[in-house]
Image (cartoon, rainbow, N blue to C red; front, side):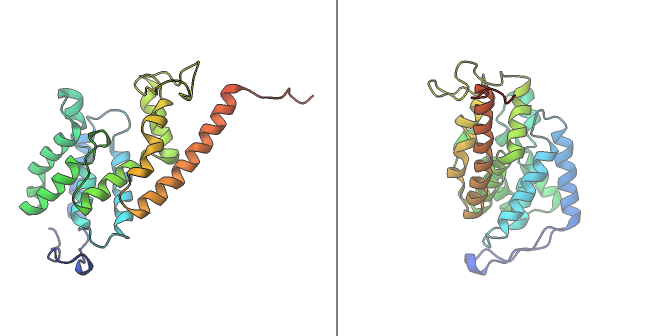
Length: 235
């Protein structure tokens, strides 16, 4: 069912096999089933992008186990429904669910432990520094999806029903503490613009900086539009 990996030796000697299609299809189906209980912007489309990001980052990280990384990426948010319904941290809920599901797909106990460790550590607000290559790449892949055009779209979709767009008197938090529980725009200042500095891999940091530059250009244009034109209209 799963292709066997080479033994974990020195990083330069690791050449890990890719996941076979049967296992990938099972993981996709599991993710889709659990994520149907999620809300907002943490559904199947987000997971698919995280998988894509993770495998892209793996191309420049030879020491990573691609099978374990891909499994962690597919399952990293499957506990979102549990969090919404029971208030349990979704990263820990996802790891617990993955620990039950992965042995059924043929993953060995040590691989299950590493995958679950990566999943449990991925959440930004937990502030956990992963100890494995798979955990570091999963964090980077998940955080990249919060940046750029897709990250901005997710921010405004997520906040649209729950928050004001921005603080009317001080939209860009220039004289107040940002509060992204109240204003969607403040999420840029509490989290998004800080993400490049948290990336573990050079490729993720470079891509994050590119995406943030695009976001900063958007914020500059938004600031100008909120302020209104500085000159009278041409006649």
